[in-house]
Length: 132
Image (cartoon, rainbow, N blue to C red; front, side, top):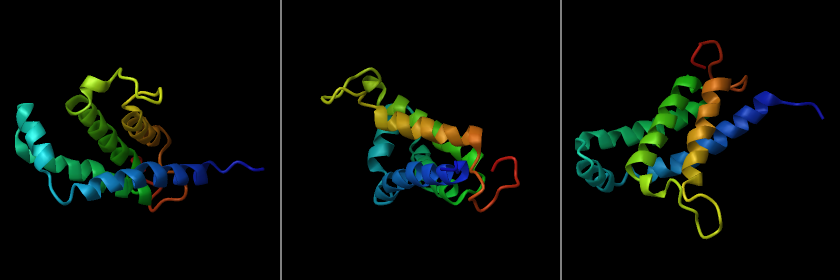
């Protein structure tokens, strides 16, 4: 069987970014919880709108393959922010099933970081820019 790295990258883009879109869409209803969390951490509440960039805009760009490398960095740093602000108490915690409690967050973060190094592949809206 012949390898198809470009199809593999497309599939990974759809899975990683597509699953994150569910989180972003859920936050369209309200950002109150995020605003409260930011206030408690000493940050201004307007920063909560960054969630839309991290969980909606960046995943859409990754899925369609437009400026995938820069979108993946935005996505990655958003996941690191979530790790620090929300899940810092769980970094080394083990779940009931034996995995890390933050393994899904790590999968999103480092899955998106893969695209920074690989780009989007050939099956993308844009492939000629250095940020693709």
